[in-house]
Length: 120
Image (cartoon, rainbow, N blue to C red; front, top):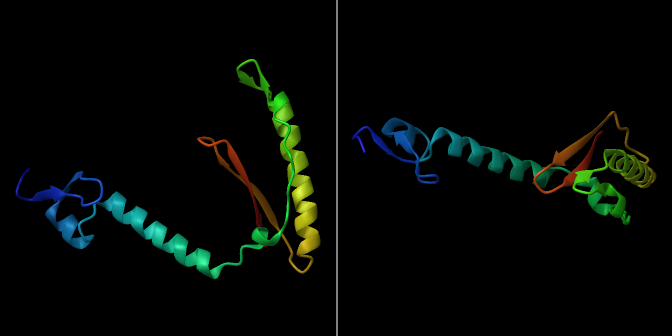
């Protein structure tokens, strides 16, 4: 490795010496990721996690979601709308003092998860 280069201490990719000095041995991407994790943990400790105190147990009927090897998107959409509606009813009844102005779905396609996000 050239004298003006070293390796990132996290991912082992080659980086400039000045980058290593500036970022505590990390490349720019690893530095960014570590800052994101720190910020996320700091925010998580300061935010109230309202959904944690709402009991919501629904059984999802997954039999109709697949047709051969393909997803039946209409069944998926119908189930998602139903579960969202039911959860929002429970959540709204539990937190009548909050006003919500936005709703989003946070989807993780790698694990097949869909999270409901509501802004207040």
